[in-house]
Amino acid sequence: MKRLMIGAILLFFSVACVFSVDQGSSFDDQVATRAAVAFTATALSEQLSMGTASPMPDSILPTDTESIVTPSPTISLDDPKLNLGQPSWSDDLSSASTWFSSGTEWVSDGTTFYADNGYLSAKSDSINQGFRWYLNYRKPKDAYLEAKFKVETCSGDDQYGLVFRAASFDEGFAYYYIVTCDGRYDIRRWDQGGSTTLLNLPSSEHINKGTGQENILGVWVKGNTIRLYANGSFLQETTDNALLNDGYFGLFINARQTPGFTVKMDEIAYWLLD
Image (cartoon, rainbow, N blue to C red):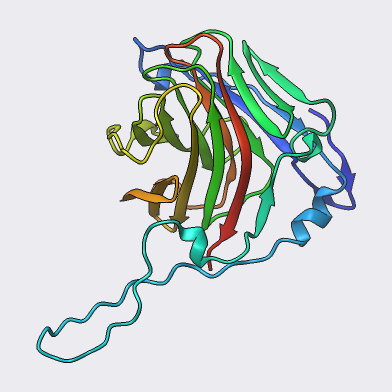
């Protein structure tokens, strides 16, 4: 693991990690991690240039139906970025240097993360190798995180999505916003107590299903509240008190049915919440 010291500040640029899950064994017994850490001298200036955005206000509704009261405008749960202004940070992935300090790819046990033609892509050569993820060095806490994905050949339970509030680069402790090829979604929490799925994989008409589809995935997280979005539409809200600190974020892939399953991330951004 290489290090570049700028004064007394050590900056992590991007990290890729992996945990494997054998479908017939417990998640806890099948964890394995690997990490590749890159460093950049430009990271400090990028980090200091970050702005902030206002949070989405709570709705205010009248409580007395006999009173003539005009309620305050209600902010829709749909598409939070419409109310948050400019993102605090964004990346159109036109440059590999945003995610790689050198070269354009990172390989782990048959899964390759690589930058090409304006995408950050993930490809798993074989199935049932478990979750593979790639993390950015930034550590937002309360934020709305959104990324655009294009899915190549896939089927059924092939999975991909966003990682957020990752506690470290190599333990795998984080939340995983999962979307499947057949249009289901979930939140998986992995921490010292093991793995838990929070929503039991409901389906949604707002998720584009199948091969060659694009989906814009968003996760609004503030304190213990997590709201999931797909293509600008609200899916579901849940609360969880396990991972409340700031953490790293990125993308993941889990090929369950399709050898060569590939996901391309087209753009990614986040809006900090006060």
